[in-house]
Amino acid sequence: MAKPKRIGILTAGGDCPGINAAIRGVGKTAIVRHGMEVIGISSGFAGLITKEYAPLTEDKLSGLLTLGGTILGTSREKPFKKKGSGSLDKPQLIKRHYKELGLDCLVCIGGNGTQKTAWQLSEMGLNVVGIPKTIDNDVFGTDFSFGFDSALAIATDAIDRLHTTANSHKRIMVIEVMGHHAGWLALYAGMAGGGDVILIPELKFDVKSVNRYLLERAGKMKSYSIVVVAEGLSRPVEETSAADYVSKMIEKGTGAETRKTILGYLQRGGSPSANDRILATRFGAYAVDLIARGDYGKMVINKQGETSCMPLKDVAGKTRLVPIDHSLISKARSLDICMGDECITQNRK
Ligand code: F6P
Image: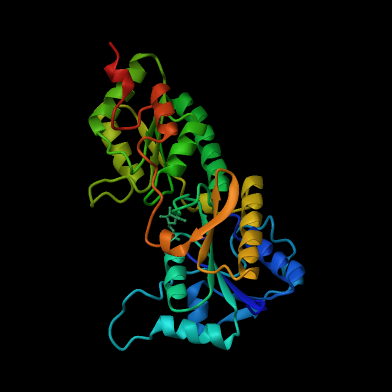
């Protein structure tokens, strides 16, 4: 096998803290350890379609460890998504530009959608390695993706702050955190922030039982309650947000003054946590080790604390949801936290 000399790197999908740390991990390992050249592709797969790129030299890697966002820019371009007839054949353009740039491999940093595209490109004969990132922690095959730990710290801090104002006003506070399909962030932040009710998309929730639980709490002289909801919670189509829907239903059902907070993009901004810096650095370095031994078509993963990899074909098209028998869900139930479907308080004799 000829030694890989030139690699491309792109970041696609929603940004998150730790992406720049991963770019740095890839860049330093590739340049310093393996003597490779690194090309930074702009704005995700869009940059490979328009051929926008710039060499990522060693001097450009300084200061990246702590920097939020992505220096390469990102987009939600999905090149394999079918468009009307006469539109550009984006996958073929990507293949052409990959060849014209003289790339030996393309590193794709992104979430589930990105990993699927990475696999589709590898099926077209491109050498590809994937690195998972997302605050939702829903990339299939890895226990943790970087971005999650940083977002968890932000969401937990926000919930902490709601406790005091909720207590002062004797209110129910509903806080919506990100998680389009998966409830990892809501579950972890809800547990870390002392949420009384945690509602995640994976568990069907019953408004009546949540309201009963909240009324029982009030009856036990608990002056306020915190309800943590994931943005992807199922709700009627006309409801614009999970927080809106849940707070309305609670206020109507309990008569208690209820307020909502939607944390939104604050969860994706800013500097990565120490754990995310380390995870992103490990992932970046490991990706280059894969490339150096010609082990393509893989995504880097974290399993039980160890960095390894799995075939992109086994990741593509899948989402890592919270298993309904997850140990943190059963711990929440033992602590009398209402998970929406079944509230222990109401079952007590
Ligand atoms: O990064 C994942 C995520 O935060 C989801 O939870 C959310 O639905 C989505 O990104 C929104 O991102 P955007 O508005 O950038 O598409």
